[in-house]
Amino acid sequence: MRVLLVEDDDDLADQIARALRADTFAVDRADDGREAVTLGLEQDFDAVILDPGLPGMDGFSVLRRWRERGRTMPVIILTASRKDVADMKDAVRAGATNYLTKPVDLELLLDWVRGVANSGGPNTTQPILEAGRLRMDTLALRVWLDGAPVRLSPTEFRILHYLVVHQRRPVTTEELVQHNFDNTSAKTSNEVPVYISRLRDKLGRSAIETVFGRGYRLATDDA
Image (cartoon, rainbow, N blue to C red; front, side, top):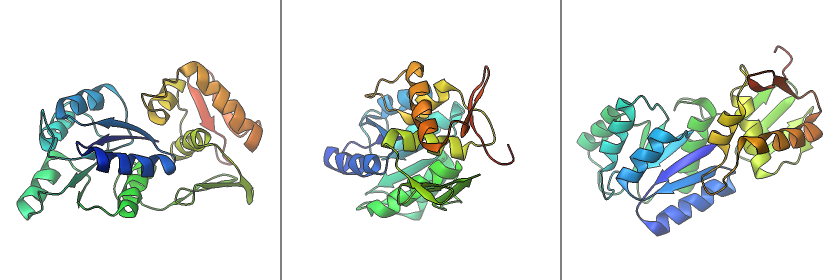
């Protein structure tokens, strides 16, 4: 899963980015409101962490611009200075998913990111995901097949996680690139079959189906 972190405090951004990457997320960063608008409009993210106090354009204006253009990714507002009820209402009206204040508890922030990335919304933070013979723990970053543990690389974990979350439909190679690699990784759709092959080696050749002309789908008992 891929996260956009919009924060102009370099030390805090570094700390949050390290925690997210250790949790297997791909992370892109922006420290300016106008840059954030462009990234959010042109690329796909499963969650956004957004500081309202940005240079160039404030975070609430960034969020409104995204929503006006039909971008629906979950956005967690993270701020130190705007703590009263009026500002919280502004965040909600702008389209925020949640509102956290600094100093932030990193585990709480990670819980929210996991929850919205797993479900596409703020209401499900269940860390255990299941699909057929597979079981994933998104907190412990562990995977089991028929009860036996499976060791995956961070990239393999992200791709499998995306397939599990979207198990009811095929996902394209381009979608897997957009949601599982940050800009610095510079991955292309040609590399996705390599990771799919590695996952099949570990989960069984029939674990992931190729849907002709549409991409890949996780094979489940009721698929």
